[in-house]
View 1 (cartoon, one colour):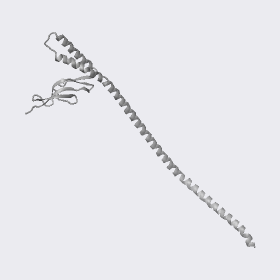
View 2 (cartoon, rainbow, N blue to C red):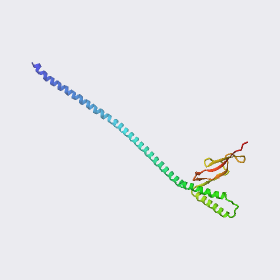
View 3 (cartoon, helix red, strand yellow):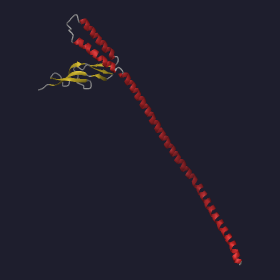
View 4 (cartoon, rainbow, N blue to C red):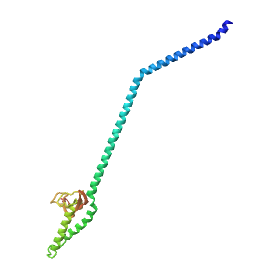
Length: 203
């Protein structure tokens, strides 16, 4: 009887001892974990700070690269705009100059095909000649230059060959005659000179 009445009490005591031991073990484990965390936290913090520093450096590098690219783009846009303005200034008179060329051509033809021996026409021809010179002087002030390649080597960039003539007197590809003068505007071709070009004479 006495053993049976003591068993529940002993069992309760035993359970309390077990619970106490479990609590002590858990407390010891938690203390060990906290101690381990305290020992590792400086290294972990340094590693975290280093990672943040690297990320900040990369962000700065990306932003610097973006700023450099943006500055280069702005510089390119400014340069292109300046070139466009310069071209607009240089070639604004292109259409107007092209309209004047036939007028100059007609005046020069009037002189070329007139009867220069006729005394009554001489004052008129002199007036036309002065007008042509005035025209040429006026347009040259705005960058229009005459292309008159008589005796020069043929240049397909500025000359248009209308015929080819065999010749022993000059080297091949020499301009023998200019049928119509050409013109440039600030170096850009307005109209090619129409020319006759030499070639080697047949043997």
